[in-house]
Length: 251
Image 1 (cartoon, rainbow, N blue to C red):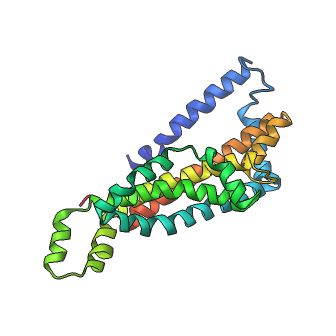
Image 2 (cartoon, rainbow, N blue to C red):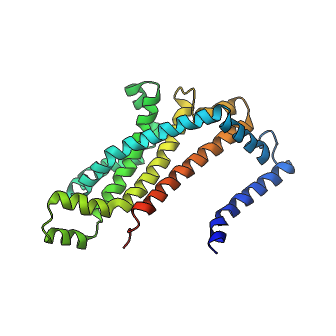
């Protein structure tokens, strides 16, 4: 029973590959524009093992992880402090929501002026976008911490700092991990887009753009699948960590 459940996600993958193979085999779409699954995944394998795609993949991983780490270091403590005082949070809520709702790509020119063309711009703009998402979720989690546990801690004589970090922080962890998962996904999107358009010579975004310019469709699809696999893996990693360390959530 457990094995059958574990295999369920593969059903959708099999259906997608089957439809793709049929469309390619019947030439419902020009094979030049839509190569076969076999050709695409062969290109993906070759690129990851000994081609440029593997190096580009690692560069995108490094930029995404760096931007998410910077965002978390800034946003988690700030979110705890803001969430612990609803009045303070409400006073800056408009600014947080405004910039969180602003497309990150609209911020590219500003960060280019501040940091120039290079990795610092890509990482900083991705960290900015991810930090706002993480900040919102952390503050929300702190503000919605169980009042009974907070009251119990205060009755037992816990200091404000202990209530903040021992109770509020732990209570907010489930929502914090929601923010981290959303933040890393957003950071990856911003990094890939930045690699396409901000003077990059490497990265998955640049690989997709270059393959499209050269009309290398298998290479383009291979880079797209590599980016998708990276996003899925990062999200799954945070989910596994959450289940391991926040197993008490909801209890």
